[in-house]
Image (cartoon, rainbow, N blue to C red; front, top):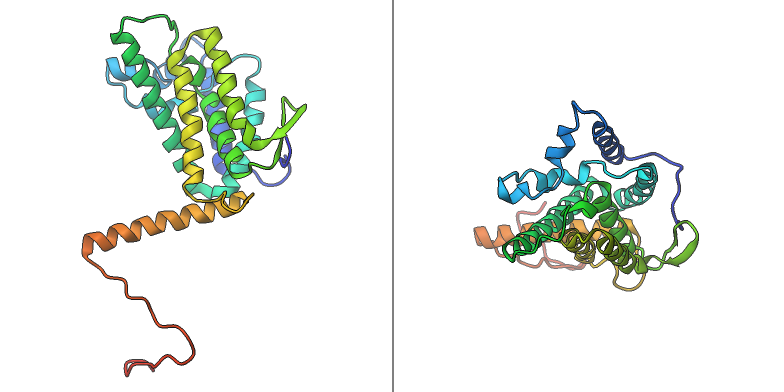
Length: 255
C-alpha cells in the first residue's frame, strides 16, 4: 500500500485494539469462554432485550477465520496512519462516531425488516462485526484525507486512495449477495459515509491534497470553535476585535 511503513513506533492505542481483537477472537474457540464475544458482538438482542452496550463493544470483538491475521495486518497499516494524523482524541471520536452511527443504522434496518415480516437474513450484522467495521472506518478516513495517495488493492493493483470509498461499498455489497445481510450492508455503508463526513468536517481537503496532520489540526480548530460558540451563547459573551498595528494607543492600565 502506497505510503505505508511497518517501521517506526506503534501507537499504544492501536496495539490495544489489536490485542483486544486477538483475545476475543481466541475466546470463541473455547466452550467456557465463547459466551464473552457472544454477548459483546452486535446482535438483535440490542433492541429485543435492551443490550445496548453492544452498540459500543461490537467493533472490538475479533471475527473471521484463516484470514484473521491478514485483517489485523491491514487494520494496523491504516489505523497507525490515521492515529498519527488525528492523534488520540479525534482517533477515538472517529471510531465512536462512525461505529455507533453504523450500528444504529443497521439496527434500524433490522427492526424495519422484522416488522415487515422479512426474515431472509439468517445472521444479521454478520459482515460488520469486529475488525471489519474498523477496517471500513480507517480506510474511509485515510481515503478521504489522502485522496491522491496510491493504495495497492490486494497488494497488487494501484488505485487512487479516494476510490477506496467506493471499493469498500462494492465489497460490502458482494458480502451482502453471499450472506443476504442487508442490515450489515447498510451498517458498513453508513460507517464509510460517517467517516467521510467526520474527516470532511475539518475542511482538510480544500485546496488539494492535505496531510493527516493538517486534518487533525483542522479538526481541533473546528472543535474548539464550537466550544467557544456554545460558551458565548450560554453566557452572553461578546467578542470585541482587538486593534492591531504598531501605532495602537495603549490604555492607562498597560505597563
